Image 1: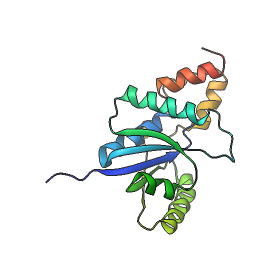
Image 2: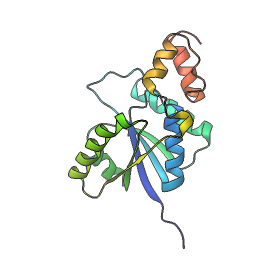
Image 3: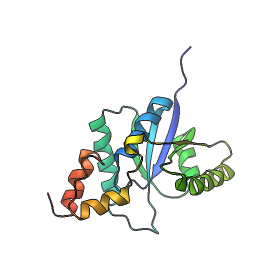
Image 4: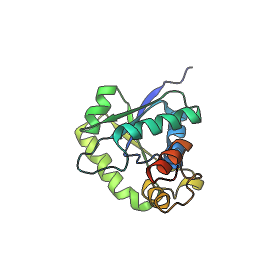
Length: 166
């Protein structure tokens, strides 16, 4: 019997993508078979990288990792509308720590309220990357610290360029 391929959407700001994000993407792809990484265009919050830059960096990281079946796009508006538009079966969210759970649970419940057929699956990153956050990466990079073990090569290069260290 052939396993059904589910289409998952993995939303976030990914500013920049980290090895923790890549870990979740790789593992979600292995479980669900098709993954759309959806970079949220939040106009209320200025990002470090533009939406197009974040998309380019994530696409480069996906190519570097050899992940097939991953699409990287950006979207605005309600996640539930976007998921329906692309035909996603579920939402994947990463939880690094207990502190992430409360806001992620609230968001999942609101999404269920807006679209009762859209499920959310929470995944924890692998232990070796569970402490990485985009904010910490940007801070370390701003002081010239080595981030090469925290982010994909594409993000390392772009951060070095942005901080004038290329």
